[in-house]
Length: 448
Image (cartoon, rainbow, N blue to C red; front, top):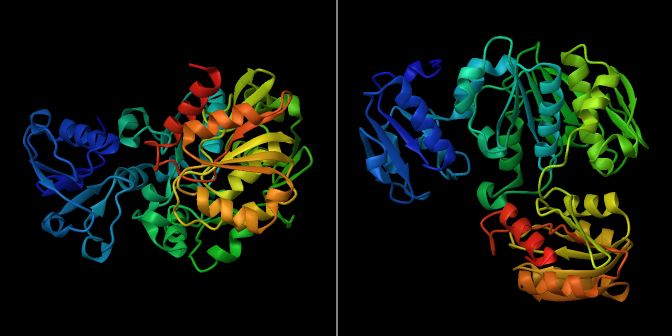
């Protein structure tokens, strides 16, 4: 077992947050230090019979005073810290200790949307080229669970959420920000705080490292230090700007040459996915001796992740797509553009105050016949869309309830058309997460 946390020896250590990552951190620390006394902190009680030689303190996000007594605080992602100045010098995490040890091995991919697909695809292709490749991070695999698999030649693909990046002080060798949109403001309060967290994927790099940024975000990110070499990318979803990586029709251009990705070459639909593929092609060509033919052969064997424009099937002549991962305007817009003519679009969920103006402007001319609105965003979306005259060109059904909304969509979608769940809203008003929402949608349309 590799020891990359030797700094905790004889120190007073607390693990804050006993979800998947907190439990993983406990296992790793205990394997190295069987006798080290640890403290576990969580908002909910923890069964200490499962964790020998540990104490427990109950900590809410507004009451963190008890944490100040510790030397090191291993914080799990997603726990808001509203007064970090009190704890900043003590905060660490799996991501932080992993990057400290293996940052030079790591490709870190973040962004508001597309990071799961882009990182999963990159791992899939690199793994087929070189078996000494691992995939960790926001996809649900705590990085310390794979510490024994990492040596000096291992390539690490790390899908990095803003929460994992929030308090790190090291960056990966290749840091990627695919895009930046309004998201997670319930956690960060301001967009500036959210962007600052994302920026840590490059702000601690060295001169021999590489930063890949969406050219449309350069102005937003200009105030952050960028020590690594910059590679720009244009997603082609708005204004086409000169960039090192770009998409035009089916051609992806990178600093290492162009590649044509025809529809039959990939199961990932849409221009936004061509952009993701282009990022991965540039990284693969920069890191390896991979040929274009090898890249395309591996691309052809990759299958889309669940709930990301996932084709559920055709029932009663209607084809259903599950894009439950969609929590912002841009993802819903991209989904409609990728699929073409949509009979019914199901929108809505938890209302986090996101501005839906861009979505409303798109729907004024979008190839959509019906809108079904669900969740706590129903009223606000309905008022906005109605005020923009969208109800004059397509039918709008404010259903509030998710099951009722899906059944209405099944009823009104014409045979030969598409019924698309791409909510542009979080799921937490009705579901534990977007996966559970997507599963519920699929069971309803399959009649299970």
